[in-house]
Length: 394
Image 1 (tube, one colour):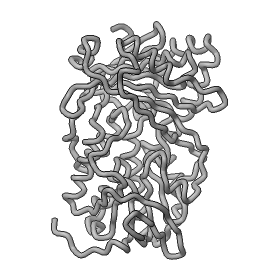
Image 2 (image 1 turned 90 degrees about the vertical axis):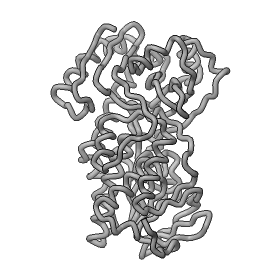
Image 3 (image 1 turned 135 degrees about the horizontal axis):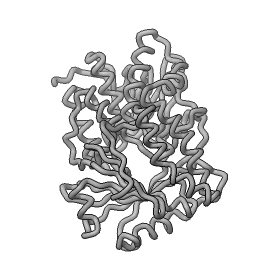
Image 4 (image 1 turned 180 degrees about the horizontal axis):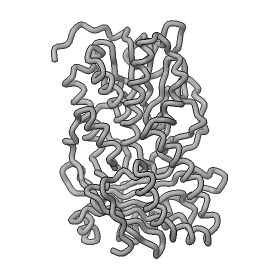
């Protein structure tokens, strides 16, 4: 697409971050009104493809958002057709085709940017935001390359959001913890690749971890790799932190790996807090900057949904010339997808409180399959599967 002479120092809308939330926002804005390509600027501090610590899972919630945008998943991916869930000796499995997809996150984000660029979208890679200065008529965004005056900002700049810090957004400060490694495919893991099997092992809950260990088959750099990690929600902040590294080491040893022999990466995740602040005058938070799933740590699907809502909200603001964004929090809590974040937080607060009572923990896990059946029947939107099958033996 031919580019016109568009000013860089002054634009109507700046989106900070070109991950799933930022790009979903930009693409939804352009879908609603292609003329916005002249009025929109995306800032990205890194250059694609850039590494992003992530399990890479995308459920049907996310793939539906992409389908509505007309974006196909051309990035390397692996279809998970069976999810095996463990707690000590208790186990059950969920089958569907697929249950979810595992993406190569760096290539996925790069693909979204390339799709935007084919539409004429301006994406300034390698340009970090340094500060933001609100004023009566808009916001000045200061970057490494200069100052940009804009009427509104959508901050999709991740869990460590600079926007949230600089503008002092109210938040609980609750952050989950995540450790991840990529390992070659061993004989132990061959079946997982052949049959499309992912594992969620909640046994570390016995040791105070408010979450689970995972094994996801994946494709990275054209090679099969096992994506292994551990997630600790820390939703119950009043209890001591579990030794996450030691729990991860134990889980890997059970699968024939020593933690010291492989490259370990860690990352904090800002979790969704319904009492938090999601908007200020002329500024919206989206994606992990607004808050991720505190139950499973699912990020991509919700980030894509945040983008749609942020786009709708900011377009309404320009039509009405009212940038207070007072209804944004209510819109999040009522959105068909994003409202699940509130529900998942309530579930996380209940489930991850149980480890303090070992007998209750055993009792709880005996009822998990029953709860899944109930949700599938009475709240199908909370089980993003087409035709789920529950197996108690495998």
